[in-house]
Image 1 (cartoon, helix red, strand yellow):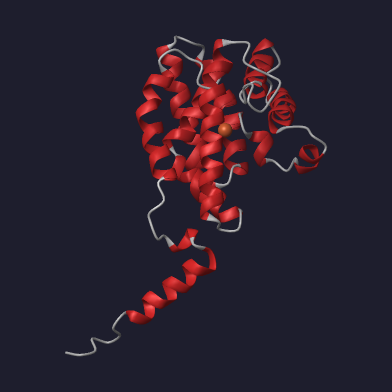
Image 2 (cartoon, helix red, strand yellow):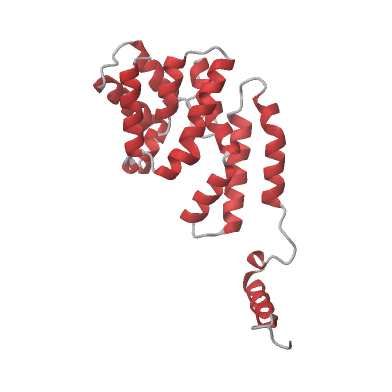
Length: 221
Ligand SMILES: [Fe+2]
């Protein structure tokens, strides 16, 4: 891969991915993609730029496309084609990179599934990063959906289940993820008894009651 082109792609991504997404999702996807690239002897010149660009359709302001039913993989594909052309990448490499962006969602969310080893690697890395960084998913959903812990846990479990079923297609990947997935499922489904967060108004009343029972200021000594 042309170093100058790679620099421009990284610069473009740095300017557009929010810092939390860069740290909590993008860099893990890039790292995992490069590891899988080596393991499967794939083309790094395609995988590295594609890993950086895979969610560019989500983070650029393409909300109006989403509203009319165009997913981030499709908007990201067209945007990647355009930017790569602008950066002077005009041969078949441009289409191969952009197709990885188009095909990274897998069959769970999109009608486009991988047609190359490189696209399959980016799709797998995208899913593995969700398992590795599931606390990032928890944090981001919790903060943006009314701080509802129950709903957050359900959403994260649903997303991981979908990724598990549709995106972990490379040999050996499910085996690698399975112990961690079991642990996550345990953590997110085991609700401590008497947890006020799940007790509604009754739970809140119990919590308030327990606060009032606390001695304040070391009373009685
Ligand atoms: Fe992603």
